[in-house]
Every structure is written in C-alpha cells, then in structure tokens.
Image (cartoon, rainbow, N blue to C red; front, side):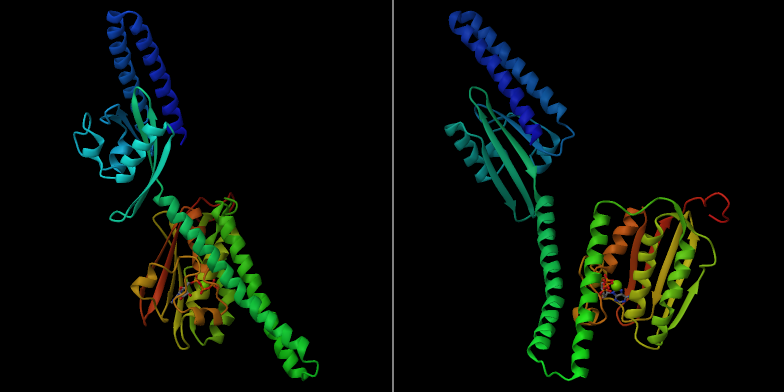
Amino acid sequence: MTIVAFVLGSLLAICLIRLAAAGKARRAAELAAKASSAAEQAARREVAHLVAALAGASEGLLVLDAEDRLIANNPAAEQLAELPTPAHGRRLTELIDWPSLHKALQTARSSGEPQVADIDDEITGRSLVLRVRALPGFGAVVGLDDSSQLRRLESLRRDFVANVSHELKTPLAAIQGFVETLQDDAEMPEATRQRFLERIARQTERLKTLVHDLLTLSRLDDGRVGTAEPTDFAAVVRETVRDLHSLADKQRLRFAAEGSDIAAWVAADREALRQVAGNLIDNAIKYTPAGGQVRVVLQRREGRAVLEVIDTGIGLAPEDQARVFERFYRVDRARSRDAGGTGLGLSIVKNTVKGLGGEIGVRSELGHGSTFTVELPLTPPPAGEAGG
Ligand SMILES: Nc1ncnc2c1ncn2[C@@H]1O[C@H](COP(=O)(O)OP(=O)(O)OP(=O)(O)O)[C@@H](O)[C@H]1O
Ligand SMILES: [Mg+2]
C-alpha cells in the first residue's frame, strides 16, 4: 500500500511537470512539441527508475500509458499476473484476462476515482487485491497484492476461535448442568452429591488445563520460549521420566529410558524443555494399550540433542501424521477428551521446538506404534559443568 502510494505520488508529480510543459507548448507551437516529447521521455525514464526501485517489492506494479499499453512493471507483477514475454508495448487486454481489472480501469478513467478489485483464481487458489488509479494525461497504474496468505491466516484464526469456544463450552455446560441439578434437588443423597461435586471438580480442572495451554501457545506465538541459558536436556528428560513412571505403571506398560545419563546442554528454558519431553512421553503412555512398551532415547548426534519417544501403541495413519501438530487436532476426539486431552499438546511442542531452532518429526504405523523425534541444537555447557 505504501509502495503504491509512493509511486502514485511520484507519477502525479511527473504528470504535472509534463502538463506544465504542455501548457508552455500552447504558447509556442514548436517549443511545445519539443518540450512535450522531452517531458514524456523524462516521465518514461522516471517511471523506469521507479519500477527498478521496486524490483524487490512483494507487491506488483503495472504502469500503463494512455492507450492501456504496458510501459513498465516490476518482477512481482510479472509473477502475480503471469505476464507473457515480451509484454511491454502490448495492450493490457492482450496480456491479462481479468474482466474485473479491465472494468476497474474503465471506471477509474471515467470517474477519476481510484478503484479496488478482487481476483479469486480458482485454478491456482490465489486471491489478489488490485488497486487501480488513472492519471489524466498519462495513463494508469495498477498495484497487485497477493492476499492469499492473509485469507489463509484469517480462516485459521476463525477455526481457532471456533475451536476454543467449543472446547470451553463443553466443560462449562457440564458444570452448569451439575450445579443446576444440585440446586434443584435438596434431598439428594450424600453419595450422589459427592459424585456430582467430583465431576464439577474434574471439569474445572479441564478448563484450567485448557486456559493454561492457550496461554502457553500465545506466549509461543509472541516468540517467547524462555531464556537462552544452557540447560541440560538429559536432566530434564530424567526428571520427566521419573514423574511419569507411575502413569506408565498404572497403564501396565514397560517403560524404559536410555541415554539420559549423558549431558546434553541446549540453550533453552527448563520449563520449555519439560513441556517438550512431558507432552511426548505423556502421549506415548496415553496412546499405548496395556502390555505395550514406551522407550525414551536421548542421544547427542552431529551437534544436536536428539530425543526419540518410541511406543508400540495405536499408531497414526499417514493422513493423521501430517495433522497431529495442528491446534486441537485429535484423531479420536472422544478418546482423547476422556483421557483429559485438549489437543494442544503437540502444537505446543512443535512451536517450542521451532522457537528453539530445532526440528520435530513423527514416524508411525497404524496399529503398530509411533516414534516422535525432537532435535535441538547443542550449546557449550556453562563454566564448571562437564559434557556438551
Ligand atoms: N504417541 C501417539 N500415538 C498415537 N496417536 C498419538 C500419539 N501422540 C499423539 N497422538 C494423536 O495426536 C493427537 C494430538 O496430540 P496432542 O498431544 O496434541 O493432544 P492430546 O494428547 O489429545 O491432548 P493434550 O493437549 O492433553 O496433549 C492426539 O489426540 C492423538 O490422536
Ligand atoms: Mg498430548
């Protein structure tokens, strides 16, 4: 937008110079012809300079003469409008097949008002915003802006808000239901009353987790992943394994950790690392039926700390593997919700890992198990500590 405004301002100035020159020309015919053509050439040179200055801009720019022939454009316009070569000197109607652009040009000319048009290309799936401005006595300029990315983000935001509202509504409706029943039934036996209170407590806990996860995500969206002090990832993995051992025992799983006796220093906040290891191990335990196995393997490899969480659980189909890192994505909503899941765990892990300059991946086979891998860049240990 600022680019187009800048260019339009410059072009208007050029036009004024040219018109002034033409005015003098009326007073002296011979001089006028020279002045006019000199002004025109100067104007074209200026346009060429302006467009060259916009070579790196992501917004496209087309400059047309009074007969709608293309005088100049920047590379972004060439790409966005898929211009054929050669394009200069040819009429716009031969170059671009967008009726709304031609209509906007006509209206801009007849009304003198700037026009805006939208193009939705169904074949490429691209959305463009066109800004058209006619310059009397010169021609016109067209700015092209790719709004596809913006549209995608808007649609993601809408989905996110809808998901959050839904996730908040479910426990709230349940709490409301229990409270109303308690209020309505003064004679309720003590045991039933206790059961209702426990359910309210469980749903409240769920709401708390959800809000906590949402806050974590919004912190990560701001690019805040904690301090860059060196932290021993191995020590964090050891602690997490210890904390989750009873959960694995309850599920009757074999649970083993390998390699966390090494030191693996990474520049990351302890809490961020705990989230990464905790979410992956928690998932492996949650999605592995009794009798299965969960292995946690930490290695140092080519300047990176590599954590693998390997389970023999329910596994993931290929189409789900691509989507599990999305916010709120759960393969089996009911099962995950029963297990207390919000569907935010893996997106928190992914954002954290990305924020720390690392990578995350999954290999899985439906019905056989999954391996989630996280790689984080190693950093030298703090003074006085061994290993790196
Ligand atoms: N190890 C695994 N094996 C099979 N499926 C998994 C595994 N880990 C994650 N999934 C699938 O990916 C989905 C998303 O995982 P994620 O950790 O983001 O959410 P969640 O576990 O449902 O809830 P929470 O927010 O409590 O972690 C899960 O619901 C589950 O369907
Ligand atoms: Mg999870």
